[in-house]
Image (tube, rainbow, N blue to C red; front, side, top):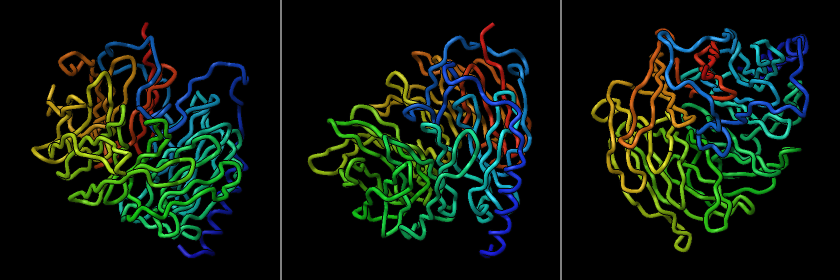
Length: 421
């Protein structure tokens, strides 16, 4: 899209945003409200701090509370804060952020640059909420900050102009992370592989240019190991740990996939890190060695070729979904050894989350499953179908928050009541 056409489209979108009537503001600041502020929730461990949930669903699934049908084109999930639900989608030539109230009514829409019309069109990332502000990365490299209550833009940075961003054929797909006063992200460019921006202004705090490779599609985690807070992420050809205070590269190890699709958010525990890539690239657990600035391989399995379905690390067990080798399978393995605890080939390729010792698994063809975590791995308890849609319609991961289940499929957001009766 040329600059004049984009400016016109964004102008129309801004006007439309101002015309959205805020029917009802969320509850008072003192109320305890459901919170799922970013991809995979608090600390990005993908485990909801929920209790009082159904242990089995009725036939046909739990009750549908409401359905919103104008989310825009894309794969963004939902974040939840301040009594509002946030997501993103493409509307024509413009990508938009959306805020809904808890009853599914639109509060506001705000533009964040040009829509992604290339390979796998649509929005990619989920808005990250922090301290009254939403942070969102556009696939073309526009990173914006927005007032959560109104959608008013606070600042925006073009990662291409500032850092010469470099990324693959699916654009930038990183869910940015906020740590203290910093917004951390990976433009992957020679003027900034990983960078920290001031969350209030968008100004550059530090840049890392030590890392050799460009951005993949990985959303990072921030962890503490041996007293150091570090960001762990994957580039196109490596796994890296970066000191979040200084931007210094702490360690790096090659991880070159058979297909350039490093997308899985790393799983971390006590210095051990699981990463994987699809298309038979496999999955591996690494042990960080800060003294030698690298990580050693603890175990590797080619059949654990998790692509972008997410993983759960629960009570020493690693749950996830293999992608290609030998057919799609859901797995439970011992985290520290890679030993198989249980495999299932009926669930297909699923995106997952966890709450109250249960796994919530959304199949890419629209089957939703509830699994109980057991000493022997897992048992399938309940299932229902949302209906078949075109390939890759169900890529957004499930969210459990406020005793509700949120499922995004293209234009549609389904919200289910999963409270125990």
